[in-house]
Image (cartoon, rainbow, N blue to C red):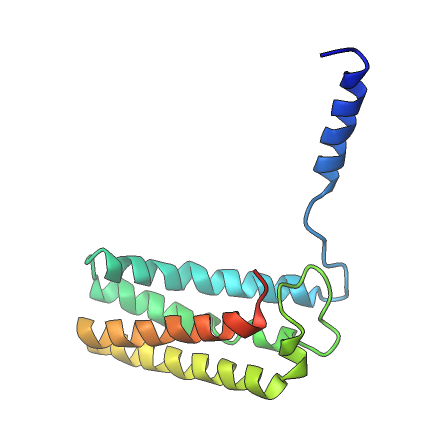
Length: 149
């Protein structure tokens, strides 16, 4: 490498290092808060799926996870205010343009988590699988129109 290329390469590395994710600097950080709330939901939801997919169902552990999901499920929704469509959001403008549909998807998710908790209390793995699949489907149905990839 020539001595002239070294400053160019160093400049490139500095430029790439500065290209991080946009920070949410608004009061209350609504975008960051809702993103963290969704991550918290995934942290309790995904282990349930692993348990079911790998045929390692543990009734008590599953019930604890379903209860935790139920407790966390309401956290993100209040942070979708009318002035929260700005970077670093991964929400599509449709969240605000078709709020009735967005709220319907949210209600579907809430109902599915109610059913999952009820199924977890029965300890019937077949009922739990159906309820888990319904929660998963509600997530996917909402992500398709309302979340960018």
